[in-house]
Image (cartoon, rainbow, N blue to C red; front, side, top):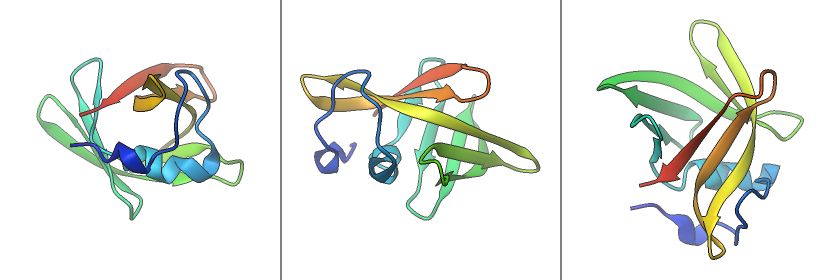
Length: 109
């Protein structure tokens, strides 16, 4: 069950502020449109599971206040985060990659 009660009230499409990113990504397991799932831990570790195969990486908030991830051995990317919300309650997050604009939505399970 997601822990969204600690999240601020959210409007759909509103940017997630840098100070809210840690609570937003760790609020619960995210399920993406393709069926993959991702868990973000408070210690900065993350596990992305696609077709039953887990991949382990790291996440952090960079000096510009953006969400970033690192996937060994060398993949690093930063994203803007916006809320997916209904009636002021966060239901998930939209990740938009800073360099190429690709985006994906994750909904709290």
